[in-house]
Length: 384
Image (cartoon, rainbow, N blue to C red):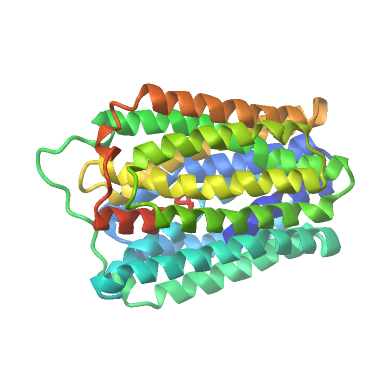
């Protein structure tokens, strides 16, 4: 809930203080940039030292920074505080998912991961609506305080579980390539840059479009619709994971995804945007499952946490740049230019995967049950 609320809370806080969409986009982008660029470091720390002390340190620090950000007023202070807030983000998702393996028997892992994913995605439906409602009705400071309270509660509950202390990272085999020596990981990283820029533009264009058309209160609803159909798309993708190879499914779904995004730049903040978003979210949810199955197929052993974290570092950093640039474009040109860039990024991403399919050949087969489990386990924002 806290992570689902924070981006919109930052946007509304800065916009309410400065009346500038560009500055609000810059602050949200800087926060995403500093949060994502440190995700790989968090993954490395967890793989090497475990989960307990990173959570014990960063959870209260992050809550404190959320409260501090709520008191910011000047342009410079808000941007700097947003950056520091991103640096202090605790690795909640990176920590929670691996704990299931030391919590339930192996035969119940798929059920546990499915329930966990459903719970996480359910909060992603509610949190943007709650953040928008609190920010618009009572002020963004209330939304930020709510984020801090939820983070403290969730962090303390996680730290109280004994599994945090007994969990051990996956052992790396001798003689295996390092993560960045694997050609498939390099291809996914390049593709991630395009995805990050495209969806960063989208993430700022939606609240900007809602602001310009006088429909700020519906911004959270649009993101909630996206989250709901994202869940549905992921569930449908899971039912066909044993019938088609991840790479083939990923490429077909990618092309359809890009084609369905073409109307995006021509929509208004009404039913036309809602319908377009429904299709994009459904296909995007399916894409997540296929993507993580590909990662599991091509990554070297011993990099279960790092592979996720570093790929999200790259994509998240690109998304942050997209958010910051998108705020400027939205204010000085129009949000529709950002939505057009999202479509272009999808087509370029498809071409990158197609050009690099030989490097991803390990994923051009039916995944094993273990890879299926890990793919379900990994379908979450691992910058968090």
